[in-house]
Length: 293
Image (cartoon, rainbow, N blue to C red; front, side, top):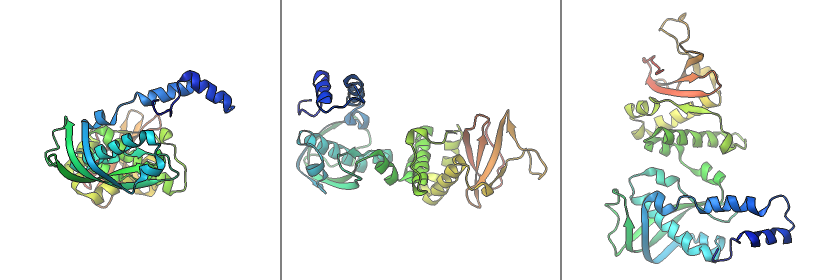
């Protein structure tokens, strides 16, 4: 507002009239914009409340040509906070953050360096950060769209660092989006295939040490997305009530239990639910035929 980049409602109304925009009214636009402006701040999300840096350099200097002058200082500050969090915080989920800029089809990692003069934070995992005054170096991600962000994220890294079911779901959703994009489709993030992450799914990943096995994590993501998209059905078969070939399929009311090969050693057990959703239940070894209900 101080930089004249966002007009107040009466001025916005006049601006729309002058531009002969009739599809949207000023109040509708204002509600969306004000909701965005009042959303959670980066400093609050990362618990880094204050940073003071001298001699800041950002390579490439993406803010010089793609950011309005009134917002440049804020953009550089965001880059500093993200680069510090990404390098020194014990939370790889921070690598999923990105700064949005006004550029067409742009996605890039930027190198951030400067003399850290002061920092205030409420984190317990910043013990290795340089003690002011000292130089620091890190990186942050910059992109021009949600699509660019999603197609460049490392879904395997997100899964390996997941500590909650929602983070597991995020990793699978990113992998699903990337799979659809690679197939030449235009996926809609808001309308992805519906699925649930069962209560024992994350514990099963931890039990099989997926955090330390990038190859296994990647194969689990591939199996999960194929399951959600109902693809590669030759790798699936009924999860039966017993080991006999004539034993009936295991049921949970109207939900049917299935087994999908992850590789020779590991398998994904899941429920095909009566409402059309897939519930990812557990990852097991070859001889384990159990599934949580």
